[in-house]
Image (cartoon, rainbow, N blue to C red):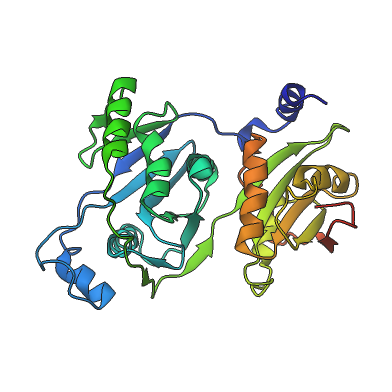
Length: 321
Protein backbone atom coordinates (compact mmCIF):
# COMPACT_ATOMS: atom_id res chain seq x y z
CA UNK A 1 0.00 0.00 0.00
CA UNK A 2 1.40 3.44 -0.91
CA UNK A 3 2.26 5.87 1.88
CA UNK A 4 -0.42 8.41 0.94
CA UNK A 5 -3.08 5.71 0.77
CA UNK A 6 -1.91 4.15 4.06
CA UNK A 7 -2.32 7.48 5.85
CA UNK A 8 -5.76 7.98 4.33
CA UNK A 9 -6.88 4.48 5.29
CA UNK A 10 -5.59 4.89 8.86
CA UNK A 11 -7.96 7.82 9.41
CA UNK A 12 -11.11 5.80 8.64
CA UNK A 13 -13.47 4.09 11.05
CA UNK A 14 -11.92 5.46 14.23
CA UNK A 15 -14.02 7.12 16.95
CA UNK A 16 -13.90 10.88 16.46
CA UNK A 17 -13.99 11.30 20.25
CA UNK A 18 -10.49 9.80 20.41
CA UNK A 19 -9.03 12.36 18.01
CA UNK A 20 -7.98 15.92 18.76
CA UNK A 21 -6.45 18.13 16.08
CA UNK A 22 -7.83 21.52 17.15
CA UNK A 23 -5.87 24.47 18.50
CA UNK A 24 -4.17 24.02 21.88
CA UNK A 25 -4.32 26.96 24.30
CA UNK A 26 -1.40 27.67 26.63
CA UNK A 27 -2.05 30.13 29.48
CA UNK A 28 1.15 31.35 31.16
CA UNK A 29 1.22 30.77 34.90
CA UNK A 30 1.71 33.92 36.94
CA UNK A 31 5.11 34.26 38.65
CA UNK A 32 5.19 32.98 42.22
CA UNK A 33 7.23 35.21 44.58
CA UNK A 34 8.28 32.19 46.64
CA UNK A 35 10.36 30.87 43.73
CA UNK A 36 13.30 33.22 43.80
CA UNK A 37 17.08 32.97 43.90
CA UNK A 38 17.04 31.91 47.54
CA UNK A 39 14.64 29.04 46.81
CA UNK A 40 16.66 27.85 43.80
CA UNK A 41 19.83 27.91 45.91
CA UNK A 42 18.00 25.78 48.46
CA UNK A 43 16.91 23.30 45.79
CA UNK A 44 20.40 22.93 44.32
CA UNK A 45 22.34 23.11 47.57
CA UNK A 46 24.62 25.70 45.98
CA UNK A 47 24.95 29.49 46.10
CA UNK A 48 24.06 30.23 42.46
CA UNK A 49 21.69 33.21 42.31
CA UNK A 50 21.20 36.42 44.29
CA UNK A 51 18.49 35.64 46.88
CA UNK A 52 15.88 38.09 45.61
CA UNK A 53 16.20 37.47 41.85
CA UNK A 54 13.04 36.10 40.26
CA UNK A 55 13.14 32.97 38.10
CA UNK A 56 11.82 33.21 34.53
CA UNK A 57 10.02 29.96 33.77
CA UNK A 58 7.99 28.50 30.93
CA UNK A 59 5.00 27.04 32.76
CA UNK A 60 1.41 26.97 31.51
CA UNK A 61 -2.14 25.84 32.07
CA UNK A 62 -2.94 23.94 28.88
CA UNK A 63 -6.37 23.41 27.36
CA UNK A 64 -6.59 20.77 24.62
CA UNK A 65 -10.15 19.87 23.70
CA UNK A 66 -11.82 18.47 26.82
CA UNK A 67 -8.49 18.02 28.63
CA UNK A 68 -6.93 20.61 30.93
CA UNK A 69 -3.54 20.21 32.62
CA UNK A 70 -0.39 22.04 33.65
CA UNK A 71 2.76 21.87 31.54
CA UNK A 72 6.34 23.06 31.90
CA UNK A 73 9.42 23.23 29.66
CA UNK A 74 13.03 23.03 30.85
CA UNK A 75 16.50 21.62 30.20
CA UNK A 76 17.30 18.27 31.80
CA UNK A 77 17.72 14.57 31.14
CA UNK A 78 14.47 13.45 32.75
CA UNK A 79 16.09 12.47 36.05
CA UNK A 80 18.01 15.67 36.84
CA UNK A 81 17.59 19.27 35.69
CA UNK A 82 19.15 22.72 35.50
CA UNK A 83 18.46 25.11 38.39
CA UNK A 84 15.71 26.77 36.34
CA UNK A 85 14.35 23.31 35.60
CA UNK A 86 14.00 22.67 39.32
CA UNK A 87 12.19 26.00 39.58
CA UNK A 88 9.81 24.92 36.80
CA UNK A 89 9.00 21.73 38.70
CA UNK A 90 8.46 23.78 41.87
CA UNK A 91 6.04 26.09 40.05
CA UNK A 92 4.08 23.14 38.65
CA UNK A 93 3.85 21.58 42.11
CA UNK A 94 2.39 24.83 43.44
CA UNK A 95 -0.17 24.91 40.63
CA UNK A 96 -1.20 21.29 41.28
CA UNK A 97 -0.05 20.03 44.70
CA UNK A 98 0.51 16.29 45.18
CA UNK A 99 -0.08 15.48 41.51
CA UNK A 100 2.12 12.97 39.69
CA UNK A 101 4.65 14.60 37.36
CA UNK A 102 4.71 13.00 33.91
CA UNK A 103 8.20 13.61 32.50
CA UNK A 104 9.01 13.45 28.78
CA UNK A 105 12.80 13.48 28.06
CA UNK A 106 13.69 14.78 24.58
CA UNK A 107 17.20 14.29 23.14
CA UNK A 108 16.91 14.79 19.36
CA UNK A 109 16.32 18.10 17.60
CA UNK A 110 14.72 16.56 14.52
CA UNK A 111 11.75 15.13 16.42
CA UNK A 112 11.61 17.54 19.40
CA UNK A 113 8.55 19.42 18.15
CA UNK A 114 6.80 16.20 17.09
CA UNK A 115 7.16 14.91 20.64
CA UNK A 116 5.88 18.16 22.16
CA UNK A 117 2.79 18.46 19.97
CA UNK A 118 2.03 14.75 20.35
CA UNK A 119 1.83 15.00 24.12
CA UNK A 120 0.00 18.32 24.16
CA UNK A 121 -2.70 16.72 22.01
CA UNK A 122 -3.00 13.41 23.86
CA UNK A 123 -2.04 13.99 27.51
CA UNK A 124 -4.80 13.03 29.97
CA UNK A 125 -2.94 13.47 33.28
CA UNK A 126 -2.60 16.52 35.49
CA UNK A 127 1.02 17.73 35.22
CA UNK A 128 3.34 17.34 32.23
CA UNK A 129 7.04 18.27 32.00
CA UNK A 130 9.19 18.36 28.85
CA UNK A 131 12.90 17.91 29.63
CA UNK A 132 15.23 18.84 26.74
CA UNK A 133 18.79 17.50 26.61
CA UNK A 134 20.41 20.86 25.83
CA UNK A 135 19.67 24.38 24.58
CA UNK A 136 19.57 23.36 20.90
CA UNK A 137 17.01 20.62 21.52
CA UNK A 138 15.11 23.04 23.77
CA UNK A 139 14.95 25.64 20.98
CA UNK A 140 13.80 23.00 18.49
CA UNK A 141 10.98 21.91 20.79
CA UNK A 142 9.96 25.35 22.04
CA UNK A 143 10.40 27.49 18.92
CA UNK A 144 7.35 26.25 16.97
CA UNK A 145 5.09 27.11 19.90
CA UNK A 146 5.55 30.77 18.97
CA UNK A 147 4.37 30.37 15.37
CA UNK A 148 2.53 27.05 15.02
CA UNK A 149 -1.13 27.30 14.02
CA UNK A 150 -1.76 24.39 16.39
CA UNK A 151 -0.97 26.49 19.47
CA UNK A 152 -2.28 29.77 20.86
CA UNK A 153 -0.41 31.43 23.76
CA UNK A 154 -1.74 33.77 26.43
CA UNK A 155 0.17 35.76 29.03
CA UNK A 156 -0.54 35.39 32.76
CA UNK A 157 -3.14 38.16 32.54
CA UNK A 158 -5.08 36.30 29.86
CA UNK A 159 -4.01 38.44 26.88
CA UNK A 160 -3.44 36.58 23.61
CA UNK A 161 0.19 36.58 22.44
CA UNK A 162 0.63 37.11 18.70
CA UNK A 163 2.38 34.48 16.59
CA UNK A 164 5.81 35.21 15.11
CA UNK A 165 5.94 36.05 11.43
CA UNK A 166 8.24 34.29 8.97
CA UNK A 167 10.46 37.40 8.89
CA UNK A 168 10.75 37.44 12.67
CA UNK A 169 11.62 33.74 12.75
CA UNK A 170 14.30 34.20 10.09
CA UNK A 171 15.81 37.08 12.07
CA UNK A 172 15.94 34.97 15.23
CA UNK A 173 17.57 32.08 13.37
CA UNK A 174 20.14 34.43 11.84
CA UNK A 175 21.09 35.82 15.24
CA UNK A 176 21.43 32.33 16.65
CA UNK A 177 23.66 31.26 13.75
CA UNK A 178 25.91 34.28 14.38
CA UNK A 179 26.70 33.19 17.93
CA UNK A 180 30.01 31.34 17.75
CA UNK A 181 31.21 31.33 21.35
CA UNK A 182 28.84 28.95 23.03
CA UNK A 183 28.61 28.79 26.83
CA UNK A 184 29.47 25.58 28.66
CA UNK A 185 26.59 23.11 29.10
CA UNK A 186 24.60 23.77 32.28
CA UNK A 187 24.99 21.57 35.34
CA UNK A 188 22.07 19.26 36.14
CA UNK A 189 20.70 18.64 39.63
CA UNK A 190 18.66 15.62 40.78
CA UNK A 191 14.95 16.03 41.37
CA UNK A 192 13.61 14.88 44.74
CA UNK A 193 10.29 14.81 46.53
CA UNK A 194 8.21 14.52 43.36
CA UNK A 195 6.14 11.52 42.25
CA UNK A 196 7.46 10.95 38.73
CA UNK A 197 5.69 8.98 36.01
CA UNK A 198 6.34 8.32 32.33
CA UNK A 199 3.93 9.99 29.93
CA UNK A 200 2.34 7.50 27.51
CA UNK A 201 3.27 7.24 23.83
CA UNK A 202 0.26 5.92 21.93
CA UNK A 203 -0.32 5.76 18.17
CA UNK A 204 -3.24 4.71 15.97
CA UNK A 205 -2.38 2.08 13.37
CA UNK A 206 -4.45 0.88 10.42
CA UNK A 207 -3.35 -2.46 8.98
CA UNK A 208 -3.42 -3.54 5.32
CA UNK A 209 -6.20 -5.98 6.34
CA UNK A 210 -8.38 -3.06 7.46
CA UNK A 211 -8.07 -3.47 11.22
CA UNK A 212 -7.45 -0.48 13.49
CA UNK A 213 -5.76 -0.62 16.88
CA UNK A 214 -3.65 1.33 19.32
CA UNK A 215 0.06 0.64 19.66
CA UNK A 216 2.16 2.10 22.49
CA UNK A 217 5.88 2.40 23.25
CA UNK A 218 7.22 1.75 26.76
CA UNK A 219 10.76 2.57 27.89
CA UNK A 220 12.11 -0.42 29.88
CA UNK A 221 15.43 1.33 30.56
CA UNK A 222 18.55 -0.45 31.74
CA UNK A 223 17.90 -3.91 30.35
CA UNK A 224 14.24 -4.15 31.43
CA UNK A 225 15.18 -3.20 35.00
CA UNK A 226 11.94 -1.24 35.34
CA UNK A 227 9.04 -3.56 36.07
CA UNK A 228 6.37 -3.38 33.40
CA UNK A 229 3.51 -1.22 34.64
CA UNK A 230 -0.01 -2.68 34.48
CA UNK A 231 -1.15 0.88 33.81
CA UNK A 232 0.50 0.67 30.37
CA UNK A 233 -2.03 -2.01 29.39
CA UNK A 234 -4.74 0.63 29.71
CA UNK A 235 -2.96 2.75 27.09
CA UNK A 236 -4.08 0.48 24.27
CA UNK A 237 -7.15 -1.40 25.52
CA UNK A 238 -8.70 -4.45 23.91
CA UNK A 239 -9.39 -7.98 25.11
CA UNK A 240 -5.99 -9.36 24.02
CA UNK A 241 -2.72 -7.41 24.19
CA UNK A 242 0.75 -8.27 22.89
CA UNK A 243 3.72 -6.88 24.88
CA UNK A 244 6.83 -7.13 22.70
CA UNK A 245 10.29 -6.84 24.27
CA UNK A 246 12.56 -5.03 21.78
CA UNK A 247 16.24 -5.72 22.45
CA UNK A 248 17.98 -3.23 20.14
CA UNK A 249 17.25 -0.11 18.05
CA UNK A 250 14.93 -0.62 15.09
CA UNK A 251 15.65 0.46 11.55
CA UNK A 252 18.65 -1.89 11.42
CA UNK A 253 18.61 -4.68 8.83
CA UNK A 254 15.23 -3.30 7.68
CA UNK A 255 13.55 -4.20 10.97
CA UNK A 256 10.26 -2.31 11.29
CA UNK A 257 8.06 -1.69 14.32
CA UNK A 258 5.15 -0.90 12.02
CA UNK A 259 5.44 -4.21 10.15
CA UNK A 260 5.59 -6.10 13.43
CA UNK A 261 2.46 -4.27 14.63
CA UNK A 262 0.66 -5.22 11.41
CA UNK A 263 1.69 -8.85 11.89
CA UNK A 264 0.54 -8.97 15.52
CA UNK A 265 -2.74 -7.20 14.75
CA UNK A 266 -4.07 -10.44 13.26
CA UNK A 267 -4.22 -11.98 16.76
CA UNK A 268 -4.23 -9.01 19.16
CA UNK A 269 -6.34 -5.93 19.85
CA UNK A 270 -3.45 -3.79 21.08
CA UNK A 271 0.36 -3.87 20.87
CA UNK A 272 2.92 -2.45 23.31
CA UNK A 273 6.56 -2.19 22.24
CA UNK A 274 8.64 -2.58 25.42
CA UNK A 275 12.12 -1.22 24.72
CA UNK A 276 15.17 -2.64 26.50
CA UNK A 277 16.79 0.78 26.93
CA UNK A 278 16.33 4.45 26.12
CA UNK A 279 18.21 4.24 22.81
CA UNK A 280 15.90 1.49 21.59
CA UNK A 281 12.85 3.33 22.95
CA UNK A 282 13.75 6.49 21.03
CA UNK A 283 14.45 4.56 17.82
CA UNK A 284 10.91 3.14 17.88
CA UNK A 285 9.45 6.58 18.56
CA UNK A 286 11.40 8.14 15.70
CA UNK A 287 10.21 5.47 13.29
CA UNK A 288 6.55 6.03 14.22
CA UNK A 289 6.88 9.83 14.18
CA UNK A 290 8.50 9.82 10.74
CA UNK A 291 5.61 7.67 9.46
CA UNK A 292 3.27 10.44 10.63
CA UNK A 293 1.09 8.02 12.57
CA UNK A 294 -1.81 9.70 14.33
CA UNK A 295 -1.44 10.27 18.09
CA UNK A 296 -4.07 8.82 20.42
CA UNK A 297 -5.23 9.18 24.00
CA UNK A 298 -5.83 6.08 26.13
CA UNK A 299 -9.31 4.56 25.68
CA UNK A 300 -11.96 4.80 28.37
CA UNK A 301 -11.98 1.48 30.22
CA UNK A 302 -13.86 0.09 33.25
CA UNK A 303 -12.05 -0.10 36.60
CA UNK A 304 -12.06 -3.89 36.50
CA UNK A 305 -10.47 -4.07 33.03
CA UNK A 306 -8.48 -7.32 32.85
CA UNK A 307 -7.19 -8.21 29.37
CA UNK A 308 -5.30 -11.31 28.27
CA UNK A 309 -1.61 -10.39 27.98
CA UNK A 310 1.04 -12.23 25.97
CA UNK A 311 4.71 -11.18 26.33
CA UNK A 312 6.85 -11.84 23.26
CA UNK A 313 10.50 -11.35 22.34
CA UNK A 314 11.28 -9.48 19.12
CA UNK A 315 14.56 -10.13 17.31
CA UNK A 316 15.82 -10.48 13.71
CA UNK A 317 14.93 -14.20 13.66
CA UNK A 318 11.43 -13.76 15.10
CA UNK A 319 9.47 -11.90 12.41
CA UNK A 320 11.47 -8.95 13.08
CA UNK A 321 11.16 -5.86 15.22
